[in-house]
Image (cartoon, rainbow, N blue to C red):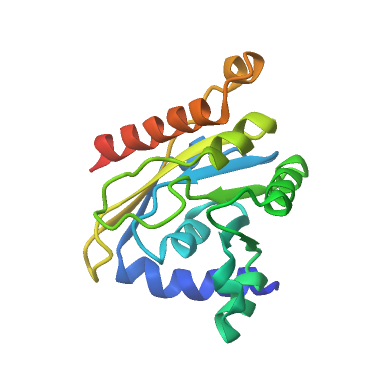
Length: 193
């Protein structure tokens, strides 16, 4: 058993009953090939929640600062996360993310780049559009809905893959693609709130 699957089992055992997690839309998740999951960001627990609800192993981009924390940094790295420098173009992180997608893996991103202080969906950064348009990965919008409170229901909704063929053909900008991704996440939130 890998550390990832061990950690996933432990987190699932604690989180599922505590937050009464309901998962919707798993049928929309491709069984193989590169997948880019783009999710709203409302809590520090969002990455493990996506990790335990997605049907495949997820590799997350995580803020560089996490990796310098003594114990947590090691755990985060062992859970397939890799560092990204925030507020600048981190070529190494972009290359790593694209390679993961090209190799048929699942990359998890929070396009807002940081946690929402209000719980409302913020503006997405161009990074999500960059990965979506520069790869052949299926782009799956995901919404995490509800408060992180014990015994209140938390919903994780995986939407249908976003139709990317025309955008890729017309070479739409990363910003335009991100806007589309954010609007799909917004629709999921509205529909399932």
